[in-house]
Length: 408
Image (tube, rainbow, N blue to C red):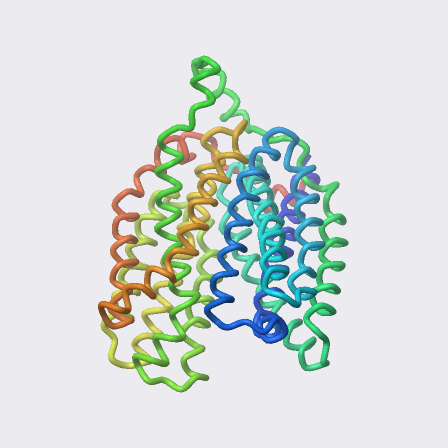
């Protein structure tokens, strides 16, 4: 059992890296695809909304399929769909074709995103300790791989269709290889089994009702992922346009945020295990708010970079805790609940940059960052929601990983 559980954990890491790599390959090719199709930045921005719409629909579909047929079947299928659809934007030559390609690719990416997160919840439950943040950290590793491979392909003169096609084929192969290592069912620890046995049975109609707690988690995910979207799209522009930093230096704004985000997610599981997921969200969101406030009022680029670093470190563990709490709320509906939280959070990531753009008509760009900072303060205040049914203090101490490996 220990060996198969470790194999399932490794397989989950593979799918997170795969998802980050496939999405990153598309992002790297955006300028070339835009030029090939012959559209403006404004038109591209409108078409990218279809990518988000496809992802949102895919999340809802895959979440329910994962609960009905199991993540062992849905995760590899989603990976194959995501890899196969990656080539479509590279083949598009007309705006309408690119629109359809982005909708299909977004659907595949949304399916993979939710199904692998649902499986990660099952693995985390079997380990009986927090491991979700480490999975999310490897998604960022996939982005780094995509940036390196994409740059190499561009320098070699490969077309977007060839680059995305090769990446898609490799992605399909990788999606199939670890499929047998995935968990067949959602395992439960003795503590969770006894807790489920003590829980009174509810009428079927009531069980189908989505608990209010799930929607609160989804609202918190929207707040946190909105802030992520702001950093993704506006950090470099703020450094360049407001602080007057050279383009090369301005790029460090996003780079600093991304680096501390990855480091924080690698450490967040240990912090969550020691202090609880509510503490990770509360103090992480508060730290992120401090970082954004520093950026908003910073007159110097180096102070702003410090603010972005603080922001990334604080925000790093917040979203994984919310996904984990949604999945653990009801193991039988883990996929559907994760899809609700991830779907609303994804909408926040898309809406955040647009909201900031609208607010720049009323105030300076750096001052608009006070709104996402306020949202993080609200998330910190509401962090106590994670204590209800998600903390594991009442369960037996988890077995150290070193002992688990020795017996495997």
